[in-house]
Image (cartoon, rainbow, N blue to C red; front, side):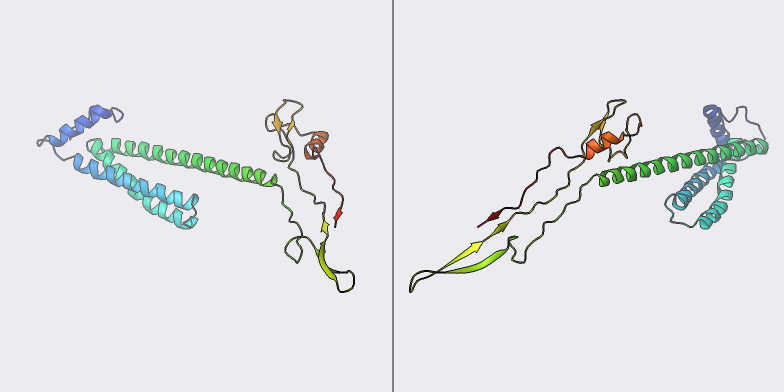
Length: 241
């Protein structure tokens, strides 16, 4: 059995050597008949392994014990496919094929673990950022107070008709309405203040009472200034007849 003259990392020359070996009818064996099916089996099994990992630890569609069992079942098929690929690639040299198989499996496992950890960290950070942003925007929204309405539907109580008697044989009827003006407290959204340290403008209530630029806590007097309304009008009750 002729031995390959090139190392596995010399992909171009090694692939050309394998193709030429497969085309030479005087040499025993057809390495491409092993290399191609082994590579396809390894790639398909690796795709299924990645899918099982994603559905088990990211989407939680599969139970963790079920996912582990599936990975244990799929692992021999992946290793076997890689070995068939390496056996044909190394021209039936078993020691070199085993060494190449170990290298490919180790690199694959390391790559899958690194990608899974990075994906999990990035997705967790994105969800935390979205929830904190939603919480801060929801906390600054003022609550609206509904005005009390009267049973008449117009919002103003009516006194009803009043009969005014005139001279003999004369009777005049007119309706007297009294309007009542009530003072209603309308909440005012907090105002922005300037950070005394970095001069960054922000609303303390929306940033959890800390500067988003330098992280300094908002002084108490600035919190009171932000929550204090600019102008406050006081309306007294007035009667109109």
